[in-house]
Amino acid sequence: MKKIWWIGGAVVVVVLALLVGPWAYGKFIAEDDAPAAVVSTQGAEAASGSIDGQWTVVAGQGDNQTAAGYTVHEILNGSSVTVVGTTGEVSGNAVVEGEKLTSGEVTVQVASIKTDSDRRDGQFTGNVMDISTYPTATFTIDSPVDLAAVPTDGTTATVTVSGTLTLKGQSKPVSVDMTVLHSGDSLIASGSIPVTWTDFGVEPPSLGFVTVDASGSVDFLVSLAAG
Image (cartoon, rainbow, N blue to C red; front, side, top):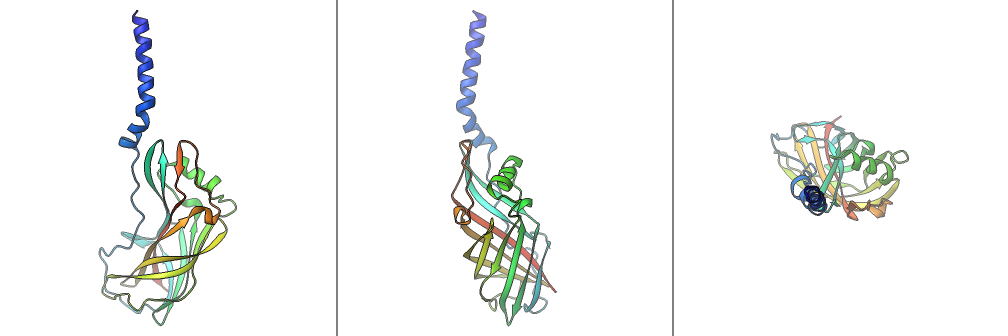
């Protein structure tokens, strides 16, 4: 009799685990990632020189460290989660003439983009982005952008930038509202580009235990130094 009771109890435990497991995961384990980095005015200074000149992407400092990546929403084991992947392996340059951004390009090493899950990152760099064939993603300025309204007092301005985004070897025109800060001898910019993944030949994973939304964003914060 005791043996029968023990077996029945074990079955109940297993059933509860199957039913409660996804709920418990969503309530106690799965959490939204911190949002993608944006320009911070914490500790910002008045501009120390002209905005005109040649600028090169550098690592940055404090809250304004160069980073790029993506933001997606997914259903993971029944739980709604916002995922942010990011990397500091970003390079690029820009030219400002007559207070206009006349050219600029940012290149991201896709293989270095990481989230909090090695399993997710493996899917991203392999089946999703095929980094062996397409190791980089780029954003290039397509037309001049007026930066005359960017303050010199350590505060920010927002400008609209038209450019070309290249993901997985496919290039599409995009538009992004970019926040710009001219602090000391640094020029700092951030933005979030809305993306429908299949427009770039990227198929969002749908693997039973995880389903990724069809759209998301490509995010960037770049710190640039003159010279």
